[in-house]
Image (tube, rainbow over all chains, first blue to last red; front, side, top):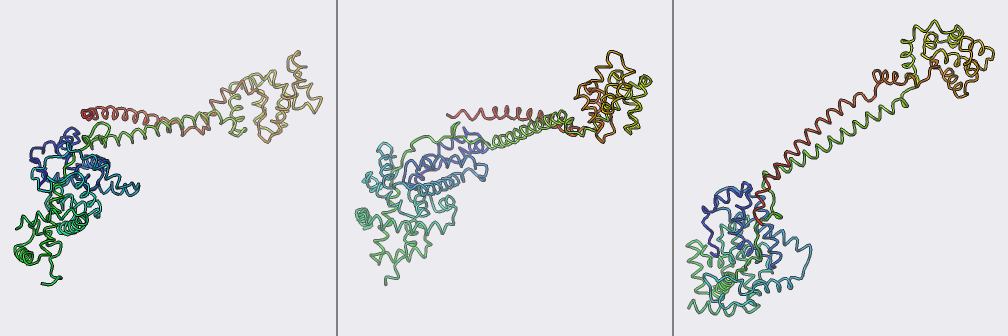
Length: 211
Length: 284
């Protein structure tokens, strides 16, 4: 799992205070989760500026709707991600109304991935070490070609590392739906990335590992 | 093994995530061992997942903490704000209603004399004048009484001479009304002062006209009395008797009181709003 959820009990008081309208307490939660929320939005939308808008919308929406959140603090992250997913859908709808050149947007997004901005991955695979910004850009492009539902699912499960249950909660769908969407998204990505000849090397590596 | 037996994407996907039931898992593994095509697909999928997983994390471009400009007010403040808005709107409409009612009653007060039927106003005047001048009745010339009687006004004889200024006015009025009838004018003047007799006889035509016109009207009122002298009395009487603005006044008072209360309430709410919002400004 990419993000280790901070011990939920630790921010339980902040959560309860935020539910009472305490902005400072809510901002503690923002600081814990903004990185993950922004990354979900960024990978789903493939556009840095749209992702920032969606992230801000998500936190504003979360603050306004926080009173509707029930249950223990452990349920907060899936709940927040669901708000973020909805913010992404809204952003996609907005983008459809003002069609921009998605290639330009991708270029901008890729430009913003300066090495300093990248986190050292705790469990880097061979691809991660080898992955330059060009590869990352091509993968993002492949993600962008997926249908929104599949994109959301694959970003949550494979990019963010949520398990099926968490993803189902965040997407507001059944577990089986997550499974089928994920498999379709992966199959399509396999096809696209194979066309880009990005899979040959990793597939070879994988086969070597298997043997 | 035929092509149709190849593992579906969903099974391969689940296999990757270790989401298969033990029986399905064994079957899938057995198939992948035997089928190079499915083994390749599985390897590709594994590679896809690995690539997705190794996508670099991007740093948020800014802090998304809710600042004073972005912050939506907390629920309690939102509620208070809603009440404040309604109270303010209510106070505004109450003030508007108050102004409207006051303006309306003032307008009716000033416009009523013009709008009201002349007959009632004149009647009131005459009644008002009749009482205080009753003792003066004996001083009235017989001629005047006769003239009034001629006008088929049973009440008129008593009233007409009763006017405070009757001494001068009555003769003049009579002379005016009877002016066309010639000789009677001189007789009417006789009781009046010698000096005033002549001018009175030659009373300005407008006065004459006024007097005659009043007489000519079907109204049972001879008005030789100057209205100016009696206007205040008449006004008071009129207010007491027929006041179209009467229902507006209590309504105006009620609206005014409610408006003041609403304004005070809005002021209190505004203060508590300002206080409850202050803590939100800590976050820049």
